[in-house]
Length: 415
Image (cartoon, rainbow, N blue to C red):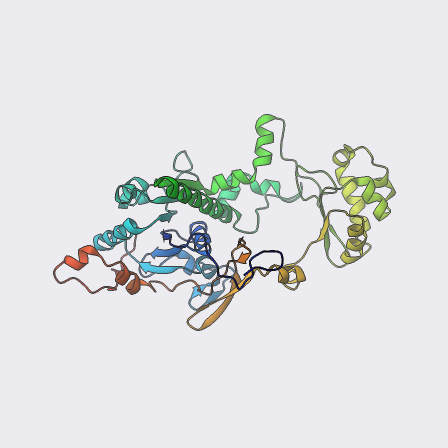
């Protein structure tokens, strides 16, 4: 069904582009699991392979200390719409069964430190020998080579080593990291993009492949403007500005300014126009664009003094009418209460054990459809019996006295 403009309606059947694709997710915590979840949102079937007893460390590493139905809320946010089986990759029978699943899979995602998958025989070359058409995604902290390859691959650490914290804040601040797991989230997008691209090639040619990326590469890619400029002009240095500046490499008025009841943000705008709209004579006379650089902190101080005399909405009314690029700086509560947040429909309910959790959805819309699902993250080993029944072990089926399908795996720590 379509609307009056020919676009699909929400009631029209949804053909998710990755339906029929089987993904084995060996990854933990954030970047790898979120990449696999992005594929699940697009229709792939994702089976999460976890160590018995403990599972993904994200099950207990809580964001803000919050839990839901025995797992952290953040784990649910990263693992919705997946299945879970347990396998101890140090136990021969478990590893043998996992390799049988590898034969049937289309995609593998893993984010162990370099060398771990090689030691257990699940690295790309070993897997390709089992399944030549496999699409294999490997995510690390700092790549597979070089002096940093064995350092802990964690978001704050990758941010810090990439130089990102020195781009935030003012000249009087120390390093200011981004307050979210930006390296992990960006890397998850790169993994999902690479996997999808290799799946397209597989459908064209029958050839699988290996996609690799790292937290560091994600952070360096984020800085493509800065790095490209620096690589071609060695005089470029990071020089943070005054307390209102929002960017080390953009001139005034680019920044945030306090009002009587909040803050307002301003992007790139001509100073004379702003001066006229806000009745700041000094800005009205700044017709030379270079002055936005040369007198940056002076400009910001003038704006801060003016904005401090009125409410955010008062200034928005004036600036919006003048087609000035600006926006309110919303708190989290203000965002959630806003009409803009409601209109974009970015949340979805998922259920587990009769309990409902509200979380975010995929940010992608396909054929006019918002991608949602009601399945919450699985409990640890929730799908052991069902997956083993669907994909019975050939070795177990022929071995004398074989354990029944769905028998629990050994409880040793996995690799």
